[in-house]
Length: 104
Image 1: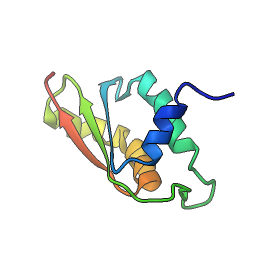
Image 2 (image 1 turned 90 degrees about the horizontal axis):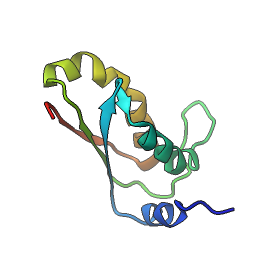
Image 3 (image 1 turned 60 degrees about the vertical axis):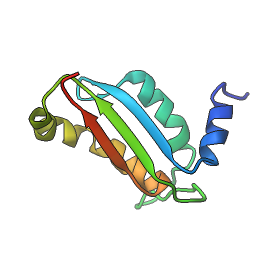
Image 4 (image 1 turned 30 degrees about the vertical axis):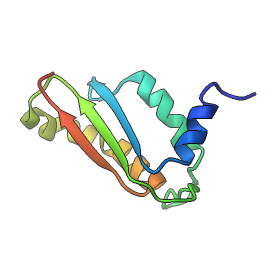
């Protein structure tokens, strides 16, 4: 059975860069974004000690976080909560940069 995400995942695998975005609720990306991310990340994940990626190329990946907290509040709590997401995206695609939009 093919997913209705199949065309998006195929385009992403051929993209020059990937830019994602999500509101932050309860110190994490939305449930919909988390569910979406499982598809492009999990399919390339290897269960070894380095969490090696089967993604054939290295491309820049970016994430835009939006939330209604100050930049100081983000740095003292949210940044650590989002670290695993950064790690998996970086290991899968090769790089990771983020933009935080505060006081939304």
